[in-house]
Length: 181
Image 1: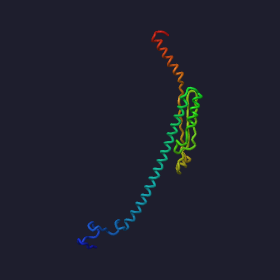
Image 2 (image 1 turned 60 degrees about the vertical axis):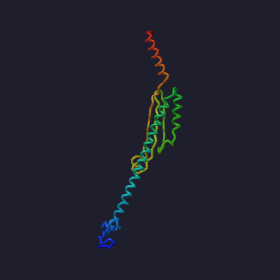
Image 3 (image 1 turned 90 degrees about the vertical axis):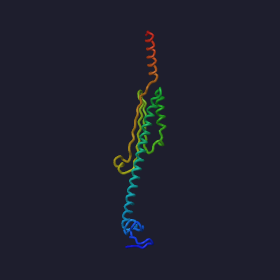
Image 4 (image 1 turned 45 degrees about the horizontal axis):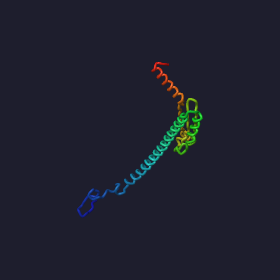
């Protein structure tokens, strides 16, 4: 099949004429419809998987954030309970630290509970919560939530006893340097 142009006779379907053969993608033949549908299915699968992966990453990042916040709260409240000289001051500081914990610090954790105990030698803090996770697999294996449990303990140092020991050692060294006891 040939076509006639002003420039002369040229074979149909060549680059010189700018035409295409019947049945190719350029003419809208059967080859084009097959590939268009394939690209649509592939794009739908890729976009769906991409959205699922991004949502899973976002949920995981929120969970790690809440775990870090709970660990920080446990550490701060245990240390706060050991910073004061008297037991009543320690207990009041621990109660104040527990009261300052608000739900606005967490990105998804529910059922937040904490315990701060101040003893004679240590101050201990433990916190727990449940982080809800959507989805069938997590609800099957973990009842739809991931637990968060953190604890921290801090040794209570009596500064008055330590200061007395240091001063006593200083006096003993100065007496030994002078040669008297």
